[in-house]
Image 1 (cartoon, one colour):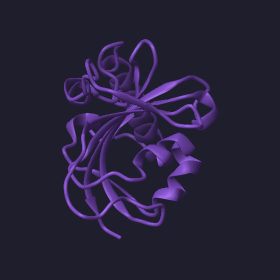
Image 2 (cartoon, rainbow, N blue to C red):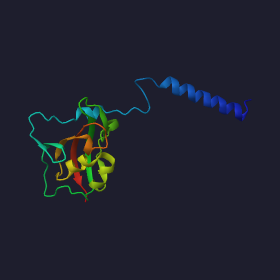
Image 3 (cartoon, rainbow, N blue to C red):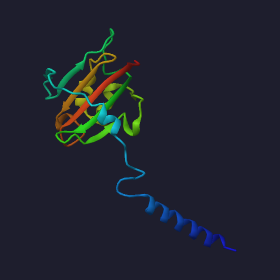
Length: 158
């Protein structure tokens, strides 16, 4: 009969072996799947761009509908994907791991500490159903490189 100490060592060894044999370069328990996000990126070909004073570039893919526009204090539901330019490596997305739920931002202005002022500036003025692509310079982002942000506003919650 095994002692409790021997049983603990045996279980720890089995767990270690299981972790090492189940993790390979292609299948990591911590790898995030962005395949749905990649499939839903917006095409800006032929879309007129607007450049703000801060250097933010905004492509209005679809204007959205409704009477209300996002203001800094609003809570919103938003689908988004953030990627580095020029290689399009995805950094973050509401579609991660095939999620089809928008992310809630409580107080749009508060998001600047998390994603940068360019993101906030690009969301302000959107209407529900609106789609935009932002090209955010490093000076308006929390990232050290220019990022591209694909946005779709699902709802303004106030």
